[in-house]
Image (cartoon, rainbow, N blue to C red; front, top):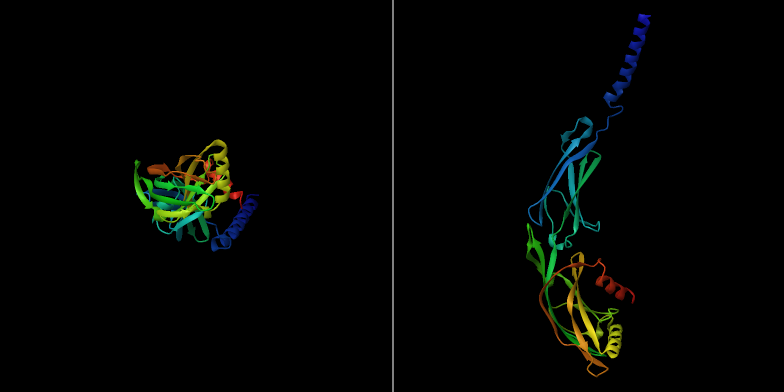
Length: 292
């Protein structure tokens, strides 16, 4: 009986060895698995980043391994890919990122046929603007020559000193559109601005006729109207809106000509408003879209 049991045990061992040898020889290769154990992200300032990471083989006790290649991708708050980097230290053009925009840095590491990823979050600097504008805006039926003086300084908070600002751009870095609304805010006159000092026939500008009809109707019925100015800044991949002030206009007895006096606003510091935000931005979008 003991000899029979020994024979069975020996047979089982031989079967086990026969199944193991092909595996060791590569017949059923054991699949290695990997993971990113550490992904650290640091900043020297708003524009300079440094990173470090460690990749481990999780199937052999967590030993570190050297990746064949890696990349770090920067995604904006909207999910769009902004930049790709292939080194641990890299520069980000913070001035072209949104004000306080939420950023995602995605690390992708390749080892053989395996791809492992990890993510870290950061934020762009808070942006502001110093707006200088001087507007003379006559409103007449056919020819309305406006004098526009517009200048701006694009600012951001200093890295590590949020109470201080530094200039990162100017008028030449943005595309500027002036929106003028009447008191009801139902219609907006749209004026493209290409120079710091510009004379424009606003009668030729977008939505002038609709705006003038509403303005005259309001002025005739109420004898007064409040003009409100908004500036749209196209800054790289971002669109911002700023309040540019307001001016009250009273009827002068001429039903075909209503002229507003000069409006001057000097060194007004404002935080940039994302175009996606509700309030006046939504009103302007609706005013423009209804005419398409």
